[in-house]
Structure formats: structure tokens, C-alpha cells
Image (cartoon, rainbow, N blue to C red; front, side, top):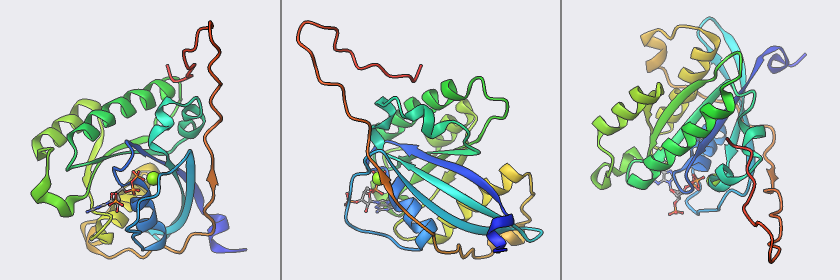
Amino acid sequence: MDQSEKDRLLKVVVCGDGASGKTSLCLRFAHETFDAAYHQTLGLDFFRARIILPGDVGVTLQVWDVGGQSIASSMINNYVSGADAVLIVYDITNKTSLEGAREWIESVKKIMKDSQVLPVLALVGNKSDLDDKRQVRVEAHNRFAEEEDLRPFYVSARTDGGSVSLLFKQIAAQVMKIPMPKAELDKEIVPMPAEATFTQDLPKRTPRVPGQNNTTVCSVM
Ligand code: G3D
Ligand code: MG
């Protein structure tokens, strides 16, 4: 039996506004790469990577990279349901993306309100390499995280793969209730390559019918 087959599989959902760097973060984590060209994520992409937590506990993370516009789609319920962790990503150089993060967290909390086990929730300020273009101050980041009960992180998907690996490792350890010794936090983490990545398109929009109520129905309440 392959080692990874014995692992606990954790569902980690990555959401946030478009262009905040979600796909770059997932690529950096699962493939140790950064793709400089921007391709909009339509619907959902999956990434899979195996990490070893303290005590030699292997976990496989199934990372769901949710397209920025999915917040307005009825699919968002399916994406978020059953998540062990939800990462709300914003771009520290774009203030609007922090406002977007607030909408994302509200949606996630509504979807999760009847769940028996709440996922670990994190606020991820991405593009920390662009500190000179920062629009969201550290105090605003921390205040937001505290108000919404999110674990705060800063990462750079472009220049700092270590910060991204550590983010996923800390989140996985929290889900598994495994304490992370300081020495472990300092160690470099090498995730295994992903098995598969595929894309699922957003559900088709209902065509507008003249004379009828054309409000898009969305099951995010
Ligand atoms: P998304 O999946 O949230 O929509 P992407 O975002 O991962 O597609 O990234 C959007 C843009 O931000 C891309 O640039 C990407 O290269 C850039 N980006 C992502 N993460 C970082 C980061 O940590 N630092 C910096 N400097 N840029 C980042 P383009 O130029 O193609 O729009
Ligand atoms: Mg994307």
C-alpha cells in the first residue's frame, strides 16, 4: 500500500477575490513553481500534495482553488461544504481585495453555520514581496483577523515558497491538533508533487428572459 493511502485526507479550500494570488499560492505549494502569466480560474482547480507533520504523521492535502467569481455561484456551497480548512486570500497591494475577503468570510460562515465541526479559518495576505506597494496596513490585517476569528498569515507566492509551505503545514497541524515545535516551524518543507490537476467550468448561467424576474438565484444565504 502506498504511504499516502494511509494518510488522512484534508480538504483545504482557497478562496478570495480574483487576482489575489490563489492559483499562484496553490501552484507554489503543490508544484514548487510560480507561473508569471495570469490565467483566470473558471470554477475550480484541484491540487494535491502530501506533507509530513511532527511525529511523522503524513497527511494528504486536497487543495481546492476556487475561482474569484464563484462567490456569486450556487456552486460555492459544494466547494466549501466539508472543508477542514478555508484560506481567505487577499492581495496586500489592493485594499478592495480585503473588502472582498470580508464578503468571502461571511459567505463561508453562513454555509458552515450548521456544520458540527467548523473548519480552521485563515486570513492570508499575499504578495508580501510588494511591501512598498502595500495598501493594507499590518494593523488592519490583524484587526480583521481578530474580528472574524481567522488565523493571520502573510505569504509571497512569487518569491517565498517557504512562507507558503509553512502556511499549509501550520493549517494542517491545527486541523490535526498536532502542536508545531518551533524547530519544526523553522525547517524547510518539501511537498510531494501533485497527482492531478483538472478544471471544472462554472455552471452555465440561466439566459435572461424578457418580462421575467431575472435575478440570479444563489444558494449562498
Ligand atoms: P487568482 O488565482 O487569485 O486569480 P493568480 O490569482 O494566482 O492568478 O495571480 C494573479 C496575479 O498576481 C498574477 O500576475 C500573479 O503573477 C500575481 N501574483 C500572485 N501571487 C503573487 C505574489 O506573491 N507576489 C507578486 N508580486 N505577484 C503575485 P499578473 O501580472 O499575471 O496579473
Ligand atoms: Mg486563479
